[in-house]
View (cartoon, one colour):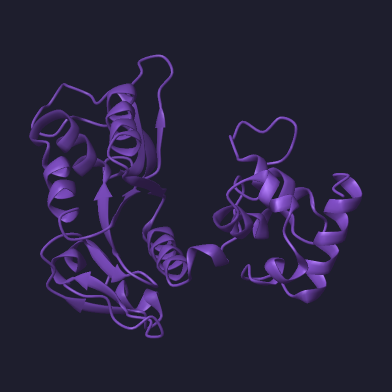
Length: 261
C-alpha cells in the first residue's frame, strides 16, 4: 500500500490468505462483502482510512500473545514492521480469559477434550509443561504496547465478535474524525473536567448557539479571548459551520453576558 485512494471510494478490508487457515470456512463471508483475500506483507487485515493513512489489524490467539510475551518478542517485531507502512495498529486478542485470584495465573475458557466440555484452564507458557502464564506479566506487557507505543488492543471472545470488531473499526475509519461523536472532547466544560482547554474555547462553548463541537472550530481560528469578544457578525460567519443566524446570536450573547461595549 503506497498511496491513499480517493476519499469517496470506500476500499475493502484486505485479509491475509494465511490467516484463513485458523478460522472457519465461513470466515470471509461473515464480513458481508467488505473483505477481499490477498497476500499481505504484515497483519491479518489491512485497509485505507477515510482521508489518509491506513490500518493494520493483527488477530492473536491467547497462546500467540503468551508466547511473544515470554519468549520470542515476535509481536513487537510485527508491530515495528507494520508501523513502517501503516498509520494505525490494532491487536484483536481472541479468547475468553480471566485471572485466577489465588494463583495470579492467566485462565482461558476453552474446550477440554478429556471432559468434553468448556472449562476454565490455566494457560501454559508455550514450550513448557509446568510453567503457567501470569496474568499480571501478560497484562502489563500489553499495557506498555498501548501506553508507550500507541497500539490499540481489543479482546474478542470468539470468531464472530472478532469479525464484528474488525467491521466496526473499518466503518469508523471511513468517516472524517470531526464527524464522530466523542465522549471527552465534547464534554470539556463540566466543573470536574480534567482536560485543559483554552479560554477561547471555554467562552465559545458557553455560547448557546455554538456549544462544545463548534467551539473547536472557533478555537482554531481565534487566537485570544479578547479577539473573540471583538468579532463582528461577518467575522463570525467566516468560521466553518456558523451561519448568519448563529453568528448574530453569538454576537449578541457575548455583548450581553460578557458586558462588552
